[in-house]
Image 1 (cartoon, protein in one colour):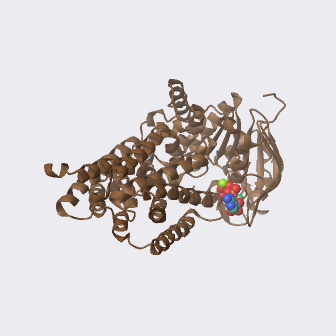
Image 2 (tube, each protein chain N blue to C red):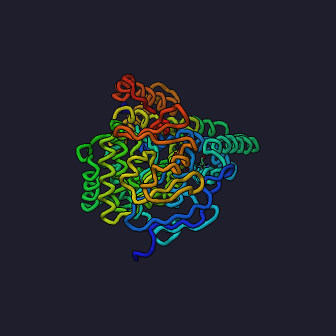
Image 3 (cartoon, each protein chain N blue to C red):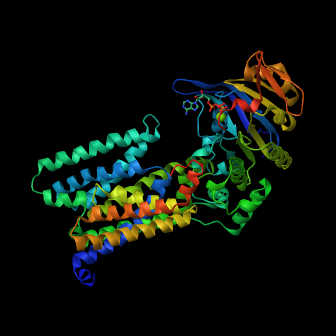
Length: 271
Length: 277
Ligand SMILES: Nc1ncnc2c1ncn2[C@@H]1O[C@H](COP(=O)(O)OP(=O)(O)OP(=O)(O)O)[C@@H](O)[C@H]1O
Ligand SMILES: [Mg+2]
């Protein structure tokens, strides 16, 4: 891959569902080794954007390129993408163990009808070590806490040694310490040249780790450096024109309108 | 017990029962975990249309039922995949339509009522040598497919979206799973009956689900429950002179209730963890 070619390249992408336009005229590039944070209110189209990059939703208009190709034509190359979906509550009672789920990340690589090789087992183990769940490898999924489950899904995404990571609110339901560890892990992955798109409501954390921030509310309302994150523009994009930051204490708080105190991540319902 | 084994029909029924018990239990694991119980019932009822066509054409109804069920299973899959109709709606429509077609066709040609009863509710006397071989062949196809595609089927059952994203042909694998359900229905219908077969697919796996949190163990337990129910049910049905399908299904239900009573999941659920069991 040549350095000049962006890993992700969107031009005037519009996604219309039957009764609803989810994304409109989005243009965005992400270069190799860059960490882009995607923020925006509920229903803004963030998940839709990731699905466009995965090739599971095709845009109504505009062009999308991932690794220089249309995502739905990536075929085998899909394994170069690691994905952590937003909510995974439906499968929390499925009788499989952590190591089985992590190995699923490599199934596309292993090939139909084949069994995992020692190399596959090593890669799965490495992924579990990286996210700190090696001690849980024999644990059945139904016994995990929400945060442990999230880390398992991250390990699954990492197991295929991806070059592009698409993470949809990966730290929702993860405690602050684990969340910080998680973003440090992303820092390390990025310095290994992995390109990362992470959807988050955690503006404070995002500001500390991202190279750039894209604020989406159907349209791309702002795309810039994280220093701009605390500016009124991002808050306006997310919570309307009256939102401001109250910068006291370790956790940034904000005021919406006049009275209502909200931490950004509390906007998100069940998570 | 010993004397029952000497009858040819009983030998065939027991052999068929072993295959049916194992195949239903294996396929049932995917059906239960993927929440496809209603598809199982839908395809089972659709097989009635296939059987009726076989009667009319003078072909072995199992042959026409295989073709018909595959068609219906894939039809449901195709309609639901386009996303305009929900899958359960598609099943609801096909289910009744194919059953009605069967009734209509049968009504045009009189004189098959006795045979038809066996197809609907199952009978130990019904398994001809040809039927047995057909069941063996279909059973081998289903089990071999599961053996080869074990991890792929696990992956699409666990999380179809992720399966696709990791590079597996999730769409095609879903059609394979639908075909496996269709074949399982057909190979079971002579002994268990069209009306009851979906219970034999769902119940052993549901019982196994109560007892373990390991996928492979769940499959093993499901097979044990399925074999116990079919073989035990056939012997009971012989001694008590009851319908084989109903006896087998009631026996699996008993197994399920015991599993539910012993279930560690149930204890945990009481202590507050929600569970979709
Ligand atoms: N498959 C679909 N069919 C129709 N409408 C859809 C579909 N998927 C998403 N939408 C709509 O598109 C809009 C954007 O949804 P999306 O899930 O991308 O939002 P989001 O930014 O991820 O929100 P959240 O923060 O709640 O996760 C929503 O209004 C949603 O109702
Ligand atoms: Mg979302």
